[in-house]
Image (cartoon, rainbow over the protein chains, first blue to last red):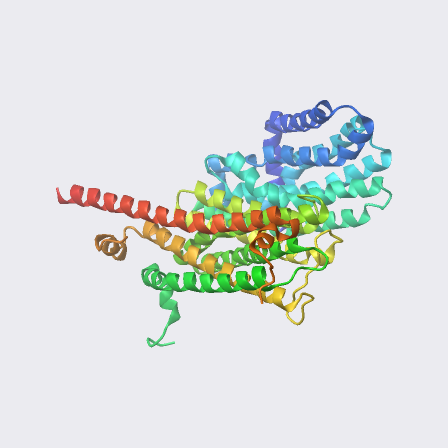
Length: 222
Length: 248
Length: 62
């Protein structure tokens, strides 16, 4: 079972490396969006510190949305997806591999850059630590849930916007607990509760989302 | 089951269409009766609330709308599951017929909730667990309608929409239990199966209005479903016969 | 049986009139407009399908 997953991860990573521009532009999107907020709201440090977790999380959500259509679209375009669906191994495992690969090139870089951006918002080092941890913990869930949306909207016109409309409501719990973890840390209550729920959501979505996405792919490929 | 009374034959649009046609007026009638009774009791008979004054009367709309918004989603998810499991056409049509009504109920719940909240808590909106999850429910309805509208092939639309409904159904228990799980501004549940903390007249008014909304929803959904059936099955003989026989 | 002393009291709703009638009003509006829209949709769909049927029968009978 793991052989299939690792094979798919390896393949997707190799393909992603051939298009590094895509990864880097999503990352820059994240940086730019985060930088827009202080410009729009004003530079007052107290306000920025309070808004930072939410702003960073929303920007992370949007940056993830940008890269989701590519999850299946490229393979669909050249017929690989159909071959994968017809292959003897379970499509759910293939999707698991794709989701993990997607996280490695989208969620992980976001988590690594987030603390640098958090400094722009004058977050304390405690908060920065929890923020990075929360984004690390929560972005796999975003990739998983996003895969369901990407599979449902495969090949449809209005794809990207429709995908956002479907997936963002499902992202809201991740956003609430992800940003909440940082808020709780800052206010002294401790973010463990939020982080555990975030972890639960990630594991649950990694467990279920690939199978829901596989079902959606089969519907889309008929 | 033998040929005497087999309910499964209504799984075919050809037989369900006339059945729905006969039933619709009865559901309208029931809705009217429940509505008049509920409004009479709720608006004319029920006394004022000790803490909230007359503003509490919004409850006669707010609670039924909220219940229906959740219930309709569950029914849609049920039909989605049936459609995905048995590959039936009619279940997808029923889900699509219910969606706009469910979305309107969710909107009404949020709207009346805001009008209730403003005089009571001083705010049109708070981001507490129950309100937020009801808002998410509205987004889920809209997402479902957008997805099914964007897919040209009706069968793919049914199945994709159905999958989306099943993924989102986890939101319903969250809405329902949110008042218990989180300390929220929204008041806790005052009605459950064994007892209620509400005055009897108010309770009856609310339940009657809930029945009114329920019958209304069924009536409108069946009306919509009939149009969907005509559209989807337009190449069948029975639809051609319907259209030829001057449908109005 | 009836709780209110006058119609004016009923409309006033103890000061909450705007909120209560704002709620009931929008509800009544929705419950009026929705079925009308559905009925109108049905009419246009039937008209369109009849037109298509006529067009098809014309082309097939040629």
